[in-house]
Image 1 (tube, rainbow, N blue to C red):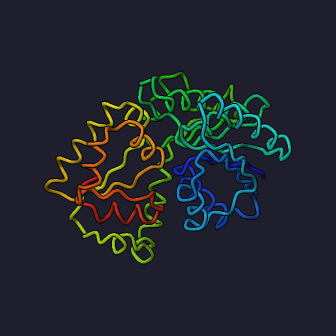
Image 2: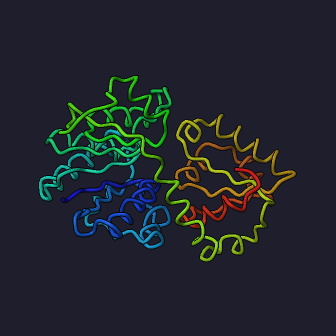
Image 3: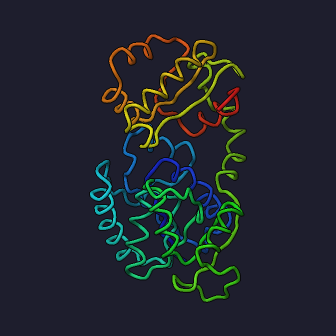
Length: 296
């Protein structure tokens, strides 16, 4: 059996590690996995290091689409993925989460009748102003196999008309939904011990156990609104008066800070020693930071 796995954003690379590991260890003779990287996250620290650190095979294809407006980025990915699917002719395509890579692959595969397997199906924010909500709904409704990490997600699918007890053969018109648990939990268990021995992130930045708050900022409704972004950093500066904050900085957030924030606020952020802004970290380093933080 041949499957094509689509990844593009950093979380998808991490999630794919669990399935790739299971295929390698238990189904190597039965399943051939073709890995396709759309290039949605193109920064080396945001992507390439994960293949090495998580021991994921290097992608067979990289579309290299990079950043862009939603329509432009998604269109490039649909075209590139369709060509690969026609070349490889897999029995199924495996998709993760709710990114533009997910949406593009779901459209490309469903149009040429290749079964879609959606991992993390059924998750809903019920806020359609979020691009991710549109992506996940559209992907679910063209999928053949839908694997939900939570009971809530499974019930969301039932509310949308999916049937609980379908019998094979399955198809986009007759899909199967499963409450399977979270692949990220599998990864956390697997890599937590590895992080303790291999990660040097605490030593690198002289961070003390249980003596810092860990945060991230990357959602566009936070980064693309100057007032909201300023309010977030003003709150962080207030907290930093009494508590060390460690903030691995998404490249997009760093760019938006320079564009959106006033010079006086940027200077205050730069001069606050208790607000530690660091480049994006690897998955193992993030696991280490999470385990050592007093608050996330």
